[in-house]
Image (cartoon, rainbow, N blue to C red):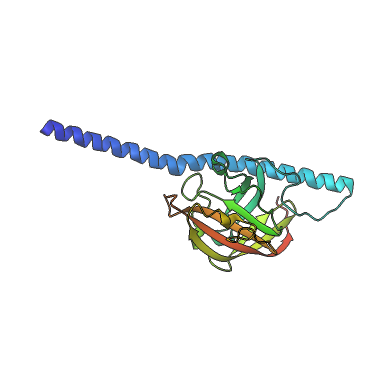
Length: 222
């Protein structure tokens, strides 16, 4: 009996160690992967934006920017910058184009086919809540009036939160041009952030809605 109990205790300790290592990987291992990807994506975005600005200056063809990309990026490529002042000055993520598994491991992903920054319609962005950097972990803290900033090459688009809700994963209409009203014609620029809910579960989706409140020249960074 003692031998059996000792064996069971050893198995329990081993299982606990394996589980602990697995949890550590989910938090730090996947987070480190996203951190490296974010660095590369940010550099890619800045290079592309700088090249576009130089090209416009050389061609002497100033034009008003309508979206964050001078040419539509493909899935997995850098798209725009996302900042949420409520989460601190260090909160900044490069949004990628696409919401596939590989895309969201790099950072928040822009739903293909939804509006671009500042455009009439609904710009929808998905992101992880518990793994791969957990960019949307604190989205349940966002409240009406909080700012969400989307940076493009020359412009910062300022959205303010209007509401927050929890829906089933099947509710894809939250990413419609008029959120929750599939088929309706949009008349204003909106932003929707989606993530899993509750934490450590994919049973529901936490959705944050926002509307464009203004725009300003993007501050040049050195």
